[in-house]
Amino acid sequence: MLLPPLQPGDIVVDASASAALAAWHPRWLRQGLHVVSANKLGLGGPLLRHHEIRALATGGLHYGDAATVGAGLPLLRSLRELRAGGDRIRAVAGVLSGTLAWLFDGYDGRTPFSEKVRAAVARGYAEPDPRVDLSGEDVRRKLLILARTAGFPLEHAEVQVASLLGPALRDAPDATTVDARLPTLDAALSARAREAAATGRVLRYVARLDESGARIGLESLAANDPLAGGGGCDNRLAIWSSRYEERPLVIQGPGAGAAVTAAALLDDLRRIP
Image (cartoon, rainbow, N blue to C red; front, side, top):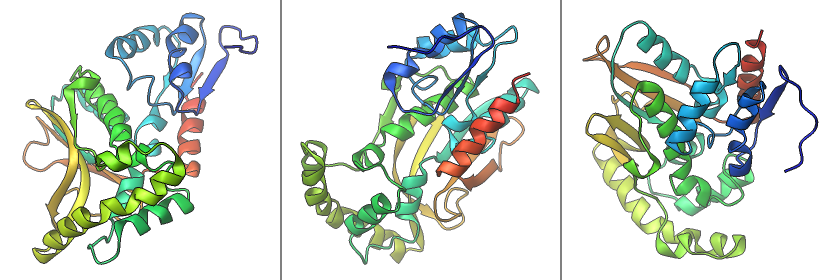
């Protein structure tokens, strides 16, 4: 990979989702460069890389990661400050995908879910290939970053993910075929949404972490559940700890969009002395 000449003290901003660039994060730090990242594959990739980045980002070197989870919401900062103050994180649960939050906001099964997916792609809420969002892999990376920050050193394979994709969609060879096969989602999700609505519940795609493990999937939540509120592309994170044992600390706000992600990157840039 060809890079422009860089000098110690320079700042590299990675606003990509590139695995190749994420592999450079430790190398840049070893060269004396600051790194500001929205790329989840840096801290949310192999655990060894996470440890390496954290070990290198000391002695005046800065690694900015606020944009990797929650598009700048104070999720990682809150976890770090709780732990620094002596608190012990016992569990976290969250709606961590702005795309999936938007898809399930108000979804009651009466209209085809495939139509909502197409609308999300058209509005730029979902990736051009919506399987990136529907697979749950993006949420897995975010949960790994949160888990490691909370003191749970998990590897990729230790997070159980219940993908929304069936075999037909998962194996579609191109974008045209993906679009044609989106209706394969409709029947099962409509049934789940109608069942939830009949009992006053809502569907949310939830990531959970506690001492028993980490898991991600679609859940039917009571209306008063801390993860059931909000709207649009909002992310929500509930934190249970020694201090917040019975009632969790809840952080909520816009978790997707170019503007809030860019603001998070700029905030991290401003923190570099």
